[in-house]
Amino acid sequence: MSMESKDDFVTVIDERIRRISREVTEEMLGIARQPAELLVKDVEALNIRESLQRIMVKEFISIKEAHLLLGCSDGHIRNLVDKARKKKTSHPIPFARCCPTGARGGTLRVASFDRDPGERSR
Image (cartoon, rainbow, N blue to C red):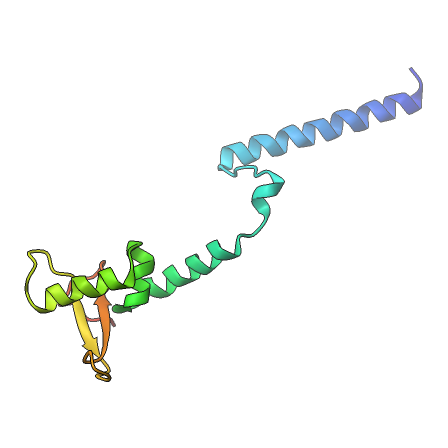
């Protein structure tokens, strides 16, 4: 075996050892290897994530934000709020009337679902 072929062999073995070491480290640390197509950013998913982050820091959310969380129409959420306002349901959706304007009596805000209704944000 010539000196040059020994160097090539050592280089190939060295690269293989590095790759195996990297794979073992990633597996031990729980780092999932992702195919190239999963690395493409989904703009809609990023927008939803940002919206959810904004929603989670609020005491009250808008009808539009409740629509995003609950996955039902704005009209259905308004119906739930109307039933809660008229006390015609055994499980009312928490709500607050904010900024009184217009014929409907103001902008409706649905209370965030992760807080106690009596709790105030700090």
